[in-house]
Image 1: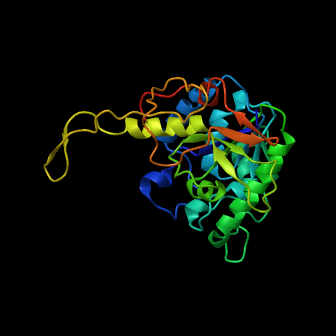
Image 2 (image 1 turned 180 degrees about the vertical axis):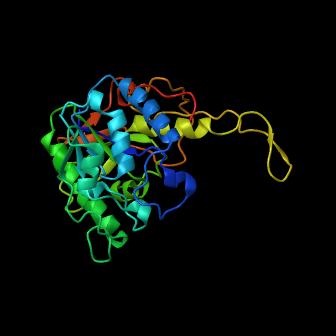
Length: 293
């Protein structure tokens, strides 16, 4: 099996509620802490440990990672990395100095080796200005490609805890926006040499899980819209996993005749020069699916 990457957006933070983008380096809300507990339970259901956790050095991502991973992390520490910070230039997109973070979170569970001294400088012309967010995403993809090569020929699971805007610049091809505490799984093509273009492919079961959440959010039964018209709820909506050659995503019902409106993944991955079908139980990727979105 290729290395599996789990991309996670931080849980709800104070600026997500207040919409105050000038709030500097916001922290999690009570709802955010609850989301972390739920995500930790989901990860516990995976039944495996994580070989590496990479994390943005911003407070809300550190809080999210610390709440989720220490019990399931094979390495001693969560690795903070400047390149995985949020991409904007507002106060909410700007982190805190390393010394402040060490005072607040300590060094026992966090590795600060990849936190650059100037990582909070987001002026025009710096590495962290919003105008070069796509280039920083490209650099991060190349970094993850090297990580994937380091763990090749293993079934390693690696997590990246980051932010919505940056994940949109990191993932290529695009796969839609992340909600708070949203987790998706991906493979990285580290065998093919595409130059600076590194492909990150969402796993079929991750897509199926996301589609189930979307359909679960659709109101059931008859309802009235804002104009007062009576509308029947969409009937017969089903969700399906792509054709995985017999692979079953546990906790999900799907009909073969129903297809996705969005991304349609291939039935296999090219790995080590040969197409590999994803056989087995995809529940190992996400530990079952909650009944509500």
